[in-house]
Structures are given as C-alpha cells and as structure tokens.
Amino acid sequence: MSEQLQKILDEALEDEYKARATYAAIIKAFGPVKPFVNIVESEGRHAAALLQQYQRLGLKPPHNSWAAHDTKVPATLREACEEAIAAEIENAEMYERLLKATEDATLHDVLSNLRDSSQTRHLPAFRRCLERESR
Image 1 (tube, helix red, strand yellow):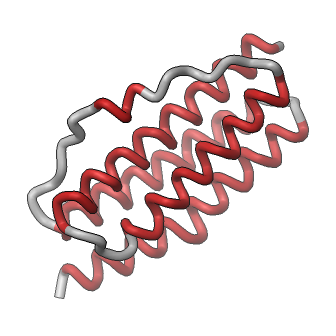
Image 2 (tube, one colour; image 1 turned 90 degrees about the vertical axis):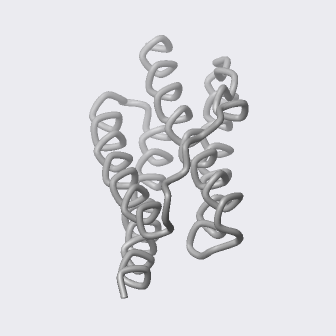
C-alpha cells in the first residue's frame, strides 16, 4: 500500500513542481503578469500540501528536479496562457486518475482539494488571460 501511495504522491508532486517552475519561468520572461504571479504561489502551496502527506505517511519525497530545469517559455503571453490552460486540464485528469487509485481518506481529500483548486480557480484565470491576450 505504501508503495502505491508513494507513486501517487510522486506523480502529483512532480506535476506541481513542473507547474511552479513553468509559471516562474513565464514570470521571469514577461514580468509579474496575472494570473501567473498569483498561481505560481498557489502551486507552491499545492506542493507543500503534498509534502505534508509524505510526512504523515512516513514516505520520502523525491528531489525537486524542476528547480534546476531550464524551462522553455512560449514566445508570447497568449501562447503561455494557452499552454497553461492545457496544463491545468491535464492536471485535473491526472488528479482524477490518482483519486481512483487511493483508498487513503486523508490523501483523497488533499488530492480532491488540489484538483478542485486547479479547475475552479486556475483554469478560469488562465482562460480569462487568454481572452485578454486575444483582443
């Protein structure tokens, strides 16, 4: 069971680290633009919530390899918004799959909260970003 929980947490944490690194690179390229400047902080909180689960379950989290990545940045802010929309949709799909794979009630709640945040906050914000950049 703990091997399965390790895999679930590793995949979720890797995805949160990737999103945080990607959004940070976009901010570095385009400046403190919304919604990236707000959501990069949220991704950090998501990673922290997952790290608490590692601790609770006595599991070892993987190293954040994304901290050293040279993340490719889209050429325009419009493209960045489009890519962020796709990433948040994929994020929700990942969480749906991971939710089906866990029977741990606490982890299930954490994963649900992260999925919901992505879908009810991040995705709409990036869609507004795309609308704004498409004018």
